[in-house]
Image (tube, rainbow, N blue to C red; front, side, top):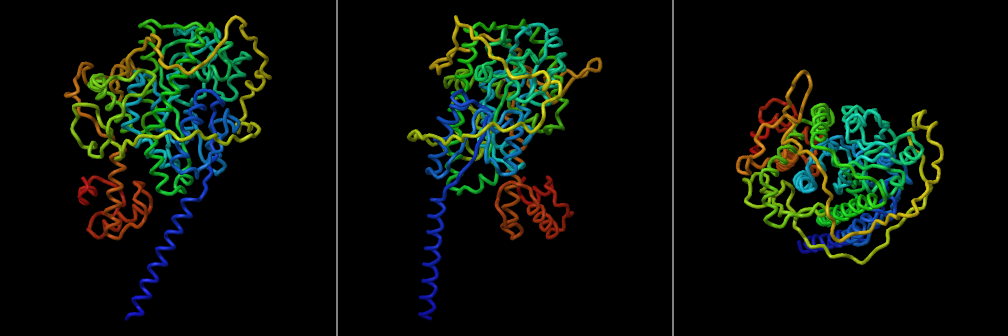
Length: 549
């Protein structure tokens, strides 16, 4: 018996020693991510990647995660990045709507025309619905590391001020953001020219196109502003972007690194957006000083733009995103507009260049009544840990030749886009984009977006989503209950099902909220054991029977 006890103790010591060695080896393992972005090095978004994102990621991973960054589109367009991430040549990318649409079409809902009034609403919705969009990305084998801003896109043109609808019919407008953008441009009478981001500067300089809708940072970074005559200040749509990594690359990291990254994510995301908003504003102001003429539309023109472009809202619902997602977004915005702004002003409202202060996030907020102060977001519990700036670390820059685009440009484009000629600089003016301490937002006239678009009115056979207002604009916060997020609640329900199944020995994989084959097999076993119809589906009846709902 004594020998047996000695054997057990020795075995336990060996097991603990092995575990410690495995943990130590895991902590010292080196990880390497290859990351690509369209952002030109030294400008706007690229600066935020180098100065904010990379240092935070190195700090979170104790210096064991190296990033090899490909700036300025040297790896092609967004579609090339997504293809290379799928086959493992890249582990991450900074994606515009072009790339995110290829992964999660649901993310494109954020670029609906006249969805947002301003950045304060974007910040609120990001806080509330980041877990929802992360869920969609993870369903496609990607991790949404950060939802970041590009800007509110503006129209730039070498010929047209776009203060009249007929200008849209006359202009040759580039379009690279996907089907939603093309659809609402056609509603304005335009015949958009689809082209990749990398090829677009040459198209504008050579006259294949005379107009484009984009951010000020892109217009400056590509030097296209030197040929631009007008910038129309109507902020028709918000342009989101995303920093994503592949799910295999993310899951290869130790859980401690994943937790450390997610703890730092909100702070880095805010830093990123503060920096890019400042750069975007500085870019716009710099172009105006250079001689680009700013155009402000009349109220009548803005109402016409709103009426026409919002016809695409119901057109893509049920195709690119589910109705429930649109319902969630408009309900959250309705609640925020009814009381969120007023609440935030009491705490010192954030400027247009700076995201609002983050509310405390508690898991119970999923079912809590509307709070008297800032609305907590239905997101997983996390601490708002203060971030200590690490010592500057230089990221590795890959020196590679530009990769050719996967898709060929249309024949007409190929024939009409020769090598871009040198453009004469205006000697009397210079454009210097500097980081500014305080940015005043220009007076931009925009029509308010709707409180909801789930309900539309048909008049003379035309769908007019802008007429759908099921609640008065003067509704108070008390009249509108703070909504829950349908997809986030669905995610939490799946996790609860997995936990229940695991406790019964019917599920032995990770509790991840992913309704995969193992989860559905466990549900079928549960249904058999309880004499329920065997479907393997997640239904209200199942949730009630399990005591989850």
